[in-house]
Image (cartoon, rainbow, N blue to C red; front, side):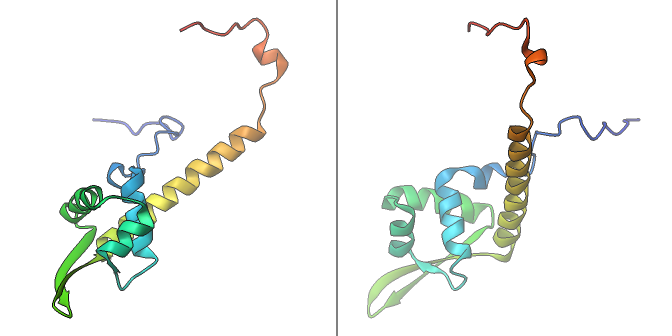
Length: 129
């Protein structure tokens, strides 16, 4: 039977940093969509995220496969139009990701306040990789 690992073990593993979201372009896409709950037209989303057509399409495909965004194709005055929206599951995963990211920031801020004392560093030499 497995025993539960002490709470300090793996404290800084940050398992909640969802690898699907953590990629810069997908984080940009989801941030844009969560701030525009009715969705965004493909070209507007492309411009907000500074992505090319192909790059945005590729990232949207990943997010759509994960169930995080929905893509609706339609027409506006006989012109094709693609609207992208975040799904409820996508919103939930994004908010969980942000909670973990907040923990990372707090841990880093706390760590930066605790400077190493000279006694801790005495006798240590930098490694040469």
